[in-house]
Amino acid sequence: MVKGYFYLPNSSRVQEAYARLGDEHIAVYAEDECVFESTLTAVNVAAHLPGQASELTFADGARFVPHDVAYRWPFQQRKSALLARLESNLALILCALVATPILLYALLFKLVPGIAVTAVQTMPDAVVEQMGQQSMVLIERTVLSPSELSAQEQHAVFTLWHDTVAQLGLPAERYRIDVYRSDHFGANAFALPHGQVVVTDELARRLADHPDALRAILLHEIGHVERMHSVRLASQAAVASIAIAMLVGDMDIVAEVVLGSGSALLDLQFSQNMEWEADNYALMQLERLGCSGEDFAQALESLVPLDEEQSQSWLKYLSTHPSLQERIEHARNHTTP
Image (cartoon, rainbow, N blue to C red; front, side):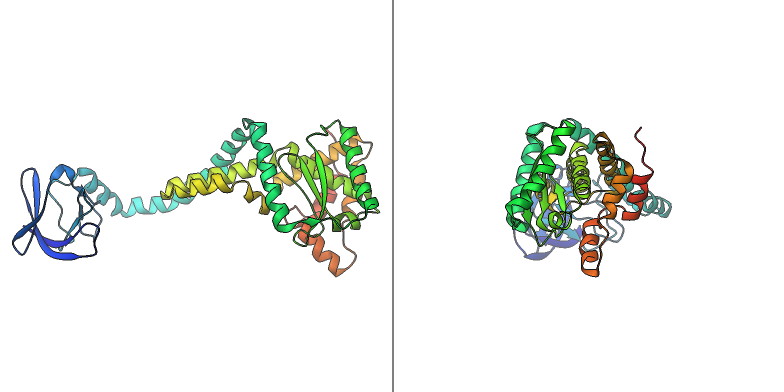
């Protein structure tokens, strides 16, 4: 006879009870009256954990919890005892404490990026196009407004863009540019996975007298598209979230990742390695246009603010990039392979 508490299925009611074991059955009694009976094969035994009672869960959801936390059911599976020994082994616990962060680092920073790169290489163009379009719809609704630039100012931006795309032989049907006003982005430009580049009014105005600087920024954004950086990071975030969901056992996260991967691009920040890749792409393409690394460095220097208000805005633009001085030095020392 094993004394304990009997929890009724689908109810918060609990009864003082005791259990009697037979060869193939278990019966639960309350006040000497049998209130429940089940075969042993239909009983689930909780894992053997030190300091916790070995709880029984029945097929209909009813539970029996012994008073004696040290009691172990004779039919309990051996693996429960093995688990208890593992969890009470101090050396193994210390090893797990050391190994867990190492394994997580390897999973999230080595394995996941590798999987993301492979996934991007096999991703259909239609998926990339849809991801970019859906992201643009979200961004346009939330943080963009129609441009307030004059027709002449917009024409200057479009002309610079179309000339650059044509000279580099890039597909005009893929690479598109739009100009918007945005209090959220300020003086900024960004590219979406499908090749659409957005320039803000503030950026266009500030670089109206520095077309090379604007060209360098646009080529930098094209570099992100050509290297598929945003798709890689979106894939990496999705794979990492799914991996974490599988580790913690919450598969609802997987559905959220699938539904929200496009909207995640709104706050996307590129890694410094990707920024260097985009800079190198811009440098190589500028040289194809007859410019040099020095021209690119001067273009970057034109972004240096002249007053505190401009500094705050440009620091916001450069906050997710390597330091401006490092980029300028890299541009001056750049040689085409």
